[in-house]
Figure 1 (cartoon, rainbow, N blue to C red):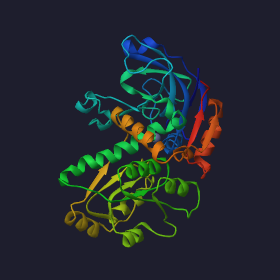
Figure 2: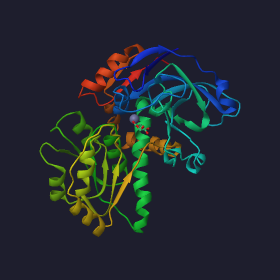
Figure 3: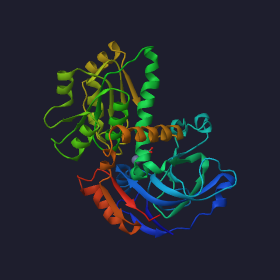
Figure 4: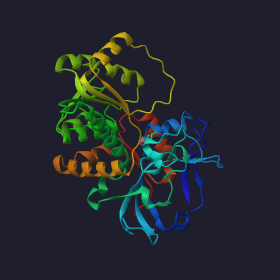
Length: 366
Ligand code: BGC
Ligand code: ZN
């Protein structure tokens, strides 16, 4: 069967290749065989193709790309309980290593240096026609959300990041955050905006360009406030409306991630979610930030990836989002690519098209 792959370490190596079709038996009695319908791509795929990130599975000199999948169950093993043939599904990205966290289903919190991620690190991804995996990693998507297909994985990352912040803030005994800043209006920024609105916060979502444009329209459709940093910087915003109780950085810029430390209020939490594969070096006002953080009991939290629980929570939030803000979320899905053969167009959209909010491949019809 066809697959879109790269040769990790070799920049610009994206190509189409033929790989073996997996059999249901390879995953034991809890195996599920999935027909891939759509796969989303993001900056991580771009960095992998730029050879900044990612590794092949041991023994292979290629890596099948794709970690944001949406498909339909074709066949299940005898011990599968949670899905049946014909159900729509998505799948988690990480697979467990050997630490205690891996063993209890929280592989997103592994304490081992080596991590296994389908389509990213040491495991092949979903940009192919079919895959087989076990029930533990496959999550049902309700039929009523199938129009949001490839948003399930990015949503799981947003859901985890915010859930983790609330979890950590239990240190406060009482924490009723009111104001949130979301930095970046890409998929994670927009989906974080939704999660925070559903939790009742006043949300300011920041991105560079002055609106109106699609990003500002989606932010406002979610009843959050869009702020163009080309007009009002983050620091200026904090001066105008007050510092935030919770900040989610999803800009992909480590400079902004550090700058955000100056916009967080007392007892607040700042969550970093961006993968920055480059080598940027930034100067920070470290004395000032240091004293403010100590005197203000502030928290900095990194959040990667997601496990099954976060996929399930994210799917519930997407469902609630559709009820609260009908029709808004699907506007994120801007840029379809036709078939696996369209891999060059897929990379072109990822690299060159600034208006492409979400690039995804329509792998095949149902
Ligand atoms: C993916 C995550 C992954 C991260 C780092 C992101 O693009 O969505 O699942 O953990 O890259 O590899
Ligand atoms: Zn991703």
